Length: 216
Image 1 (spheres, rainbow, N blue to C red):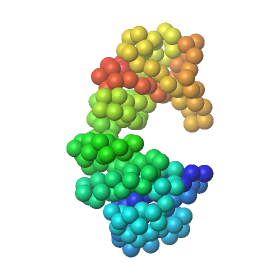
Image 2: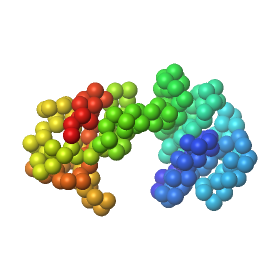
Image 3: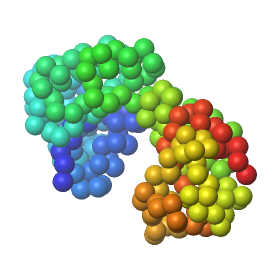
Image 4: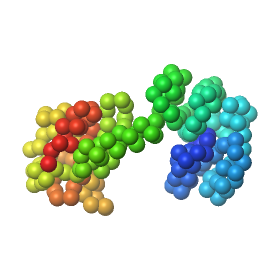
């Protein structure tokens, strides 16, 4: 069980906090809106009503003690001030939501450990889904590297990992194979066959992954 502090209970913060709590972790939530905090009664370990730009509020939330602080605040200035204070209070690991690239860059310069841009990520996912009906999911690692889950191309069914050789052909790495709901093959060996209804977990650059998405 890990400990988390979620600062900001908008749609993003609420979803993160509720999911972490359902997974059995300790979750402290903080928001300036009393109704937002009260709505989390029974869905978090502890709720605090307060302004995250105040040091005493962050201390009460235990930002120095928890495993990870999630800054899920939309307001640009409040987000930056909160991140600065969390760094000053020596938070171990900080994940922050950014509204746009400029916001993300400033958070990174402050020293936030990981920055997510939900709207941009959703846009990327939609673009991949529109570009290829085979793409199931996407995780953005950086501005030009992603992990995608893609349905195994029909032309690859019956071939082995070695035979399709995505590393040589596309500069990609197959991290795993989802085979139905209950079976996952991590780091598959070259001799593993690709079967009908398999989906492949693939790591690579955005441009290289685009080539893979074109294969039928």
